[in-house]
Length: 245
Image (cartoon, rainbow, N blue to C red; front, side):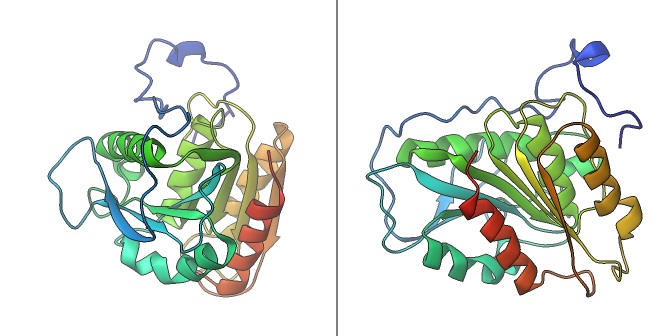
């Protein structure tokens, strides 16, 4: 994590946008027909199609006559879309939002180990593919993640806060940020019993830093091990669904 919270491009202004974690994707009205309810694979911009594809879940009864809410959920290290799907699918069905599930190219997200690369490229193309079928409600467009996925959601989310409305950080560890854009609302959840990522040096630290830099940020302390806890998911989704940007 950068020791000083960046507020201006400064020395990074000469770098390519993708190196800085900036997506080229910009939401716009859908140009094609909505996808039917169920699971779909979204187009990736690099690599072969296969088990690490980005998945999209479209709930039954989604009203596509108006912009639709979108939650992008990033799994933890060694995880997959299938591992985090059970924690969010029923909520997508109940509250009628699109659930997009990217999958890291390697064991964890590239930003965690070596900087932005294929994962950002895949995310860019998957969002473009999704947006060709659905008009996104930009007041309810969130990046969410758990553990390494939470660190990725926070880092990439703040880098693209000009298009996002919300960021949800479930037991995240780091914040790798060069040039933030926009001011999305942020929800950070962490437990003092977390056996992998100490709360005081990760979740709580990031909360204080963002608060000092003018972000609308909520810190949700819960109790339990380094896992996705349903009461925390419910609190996070309440934050996402009831607070528009």
